[in-house]
Image 1 (cartoon, rainbow, N blue to C red):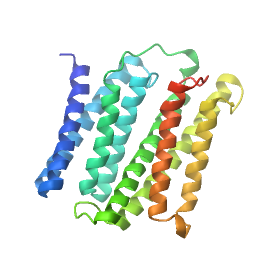
Image 2: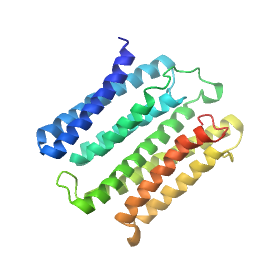
Image 3: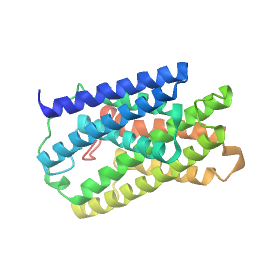
Image 4: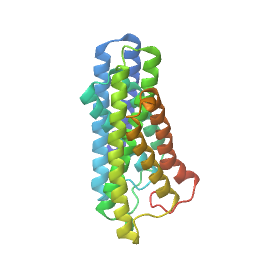
Length: 265
């Protein structure tokens, strides 16, 4: 079997196993099951990283120029984000929801054509790599915030022992939004400079660029909203959920439903 196929499908299977182990742990409350689930995630993430590295080496550039490759990189970024938060905060049962979301991303990506297309001249620049990498790291952190927002609402209703406390989930949600906003800001800066180098202007009024600017403004507002009493806690969780819906529309909806002259639309 081709090593790329083995790594891709093996990672998908391992993420699926991790979801099942998280579900079993939620029902049985065996700490060993959480350790096995996390181990499965780490091995799957290692396989994804190796697969990404092999494609990057073969292409000579970060392969994120079609729907398969962007969804795969989105999944990889979300897994990296989860590993970071798990390492820092020990998320316990929160891993179930995050890994389920990651599994859905990979499931959508798998039937797509994995062929790496030739790089068009306007994308043949390190600015392209920086713009896309920071963009999807921002997306992944917004997806993490979405997951934490949903878990916060669940925890407020159920006080589940396997989930972090409501206060911890609130803190992690705010951190994910702030980090995502920082990465997305870097993406916008590199994207603007890339546009200037390629076309002679920093901003164009195409639909993708316009919605990206709206996303930036929305999350800039969220970074401010955490200091306003009525938006803290439940309100902030709902803002995180709505924000991720807007991100998905900007990423997928515009490219699939509308016409745009953005190179990655």
